Length: 357
Image (cartoon, rainbow, N blue to C red; front, top):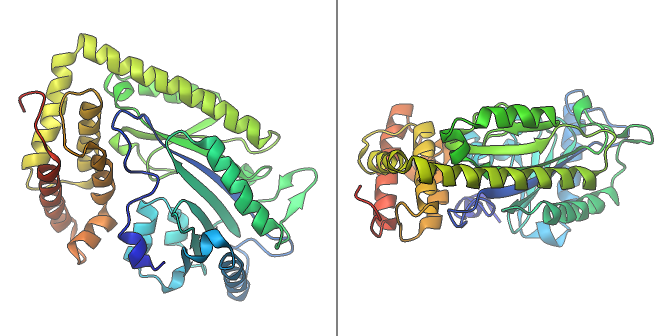
C-alpha cells in the first residue's frame, strides 16, 4: 500500500456507524523501549535510523503488515503527515518532531506501530465502536511478534520502562471515543469530566492530549499504568463508558421530552448553516455536523446515507480538505472550499427532512 492508496480509503475506525451509536471507536496503545538503547530524545541519529529500519524490516515480514504501509516518515511531505494525524494513525509529536520517525500500518488500516516518537515503539490498535476487548487481543498479538524478536527494556519491579514515568508499568493507554452532544447541551459535561478525573481517567478531544472536544467528541482513557493489570484497567474503562452511554441516552431523552422545540431549532440551524454558508472554519463545521448527527440519531431529520456524515467529519479537517482541493490553501481559502464541499456533499446525501428546515 502506498500513502496515496491509503488516503483514498475511508478511516476504518471512524465511519459507517449508525448515527445513534454513541461509542465511536476504541483504541489501545502500548509504549515500548529497547534494552540498552537510549530513549529517542537522547539517541544519536544513527541509532534512531537503525531502530526504525530494523523494525520496518521485521514488520514487513508479518502478514498483517506486509501489504500495508511501511514508511520512513522523513520521506513523506509535511501535508501528508498531517493527513495521517487527522486519521489517528500517528501522534502530533511524531508529525512535529524531526527524529527519524517510522510508521507501519496494517493492511486493514487499524493496527499501527510508530517508531522514534517519545518512546522507541508505540503500538496502537483501533477498532470501531465499543471494542476494547477485541483491540486488546489484537495488540497483544502485535506486541508478541515484536517482543519475540526484540529485547524490551523491562524491570521486574517497575514493569516496562518508558521515557515518561507516567507510562511506566504496563505502558498501556486504553480509551473509547464517545459522541456526547446531549450532556454538552444540558451543560452536564463538566461535572462528568471532574468525576472521571477523580477516578483516574483522562478526558481528551478528537486530537488526543491537549486537544479540545470539537464535535462533542470525547476520548475517555486511563491515566494510571503502574501497579494495575491491563485486563483490570480495560474492564474498569468499559464499565465507566457503558455508564456514560446510559447518561448520554438519558440526556437526549430529557431534551426530547422537555426542550424539543429548542432542540429542533438547534438541529435546523446547524443544517441551515451547513447548506448555505459561504465560509466554514474547521471547528464550526465539525460542531455543526455533530449536531446534524445527533438530529439523525433522534430522527429529527433524514439523510439518504446518514452514516456518511462521519466521513464528512473527517474530510472537513485542514489536511484532508487541502487534499480534496488538490492544492495548498490559505486559511481563508480553506474556509470557502470547506463550505462549498460540505454543501455539495449534503445535497447528495439529503433525501428529505422530517421537519421543516
